[in-house]
Image (cartoon, rainbow, N blue to C red; front, side, top):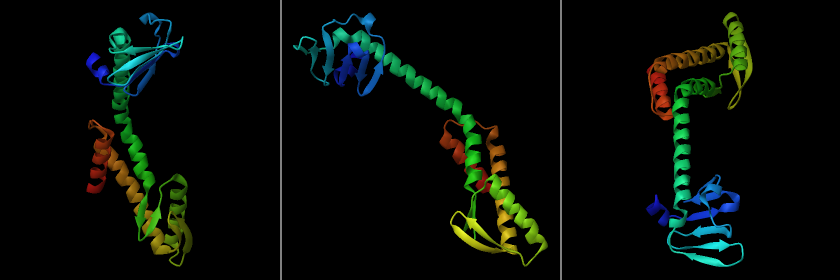
Length: 200
């Protein structure tokens, strides 16, 4: 740790309980480190430094040895934060299977140049239109898709509705395919889901 700090910018402001090492700033209680009460701030540029005092006189620094205990504490806290973030990321990976499944379902489909998002309202309206189109070959609708308005005839309504339903079912099947598998990253989850979806 000492060698790392020698080559790293360090800033310590005791009254603010602030320690910054290499741009990683943390606040923690510095009272136990017995820093001189006259020190307002400690600056280290990676090679040399100075102590800014409360009486307006700077003290040249040639070493950080005096502050090594609190720098060690800073390093310990940074490592602990990193470990917590890593643990949180690992815990979120299984949940990402459901998150990504919902995202892929919502992405919807593009069929014959018509982009349709999958949501409850769209599905209900499309399936209702399909029922009518199935009974009436002359039926048409003006449909607002993601990429504009389209006049759809009965055959097109049925094709779009069936394609959206197939997409939703493929998403469920892809999720089922990866549910029991273990992955190291969210990217692996997404790649596995996409591969399962494309194989259907």
